[in-house]
Image (cartoon, rainbow over all chains, first blue to last red; front, side):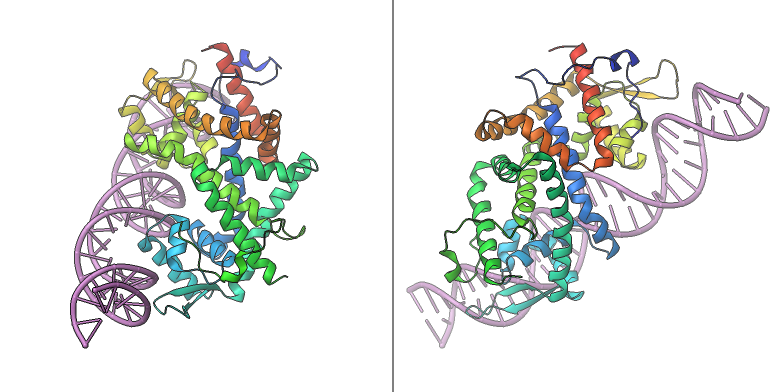
Length: 180
Length: 180
DNA sequence: ACATTTATGTCAGCCATATTGACATATCTC
DNA sequence: GAGATATGTCAATATGGCTGACATAAATGT
């Protein structure tokens, strides 16, 4: 990052960088911006190698977390249209990362499952991002994982929080059913 | 969010949702995903009303934080090409949010400044996002602001951390020079 | 049984944001 | 004056969204 050409006289004060209590939290805004950029960047690199983008990542991630989910559920989580999902999902199916099976009770449904190949990729991507969390939380001390969980949860729109927590709890229970 | 159609039998265990210590941190990954989505969503709504997108937001934000910055610096922070910046910057200038002035020392430079209108919009956007931080941190207790800062900083790629911290410190010093 | 609704998919066209490559202009530096 | 630098612009392309319209199969309701 090139040096920003601002008044050279300004570069001396070593004061604490606390901003006015009532003012905008520019520091947090920017830290979250850059943190998220690097967090997502971990996956981007790997995805680019196989010709996929973030859209593929999101779809594969949620299908892997909730094997057997319906297309409608995926659309609802991702908040995109079925047309947008269409191409991405087709590519994931064509390349053998996801399979579709008719629902046992309702045969209109095309339930989505990761293949072994899909699971492997999803895990590889999650491991990359987990590594970043683990490193960061290690720097932040022992209780920081729960603190981070609480903080991130609190950042979610209150009206959506319940759904997100339920989503995570459901997936955790699913994966507890089929360990390692 | 529609209910995800998974085995109904799975929905009973009220166990703690801690995952295996060594496994992927799916919960954190998803919490950050949804937290960032809502964080950016605050601004998206306001931007949509005036026909702008996230690209405009990013440009306006950094120009407002570093008045007088060069185009090259902006490209470097945003990590986009000048062609991509081109349209967005032109629209911001045409609509009176940003002005360009030739550099006093080097007249090839087009230093970027927010107009009063641009400052107002940048502040409004930052206030929206700050409100979310304030609410979340209030839920997390008194020391959580510094904890969040440390956590988010730790999430940034170590090689980029110095630059980001310097960027924030420089902007804070700039704004300290022209209070409220 | 038939009409309607639902779950899914697909075609066509549009928009926003990014990319690469080539080239133009003004200005600074040696 | 030659060359490097800061910026801008044109053209073509990719990705990932969108809306609207329409198609098919299967479930549901009367």
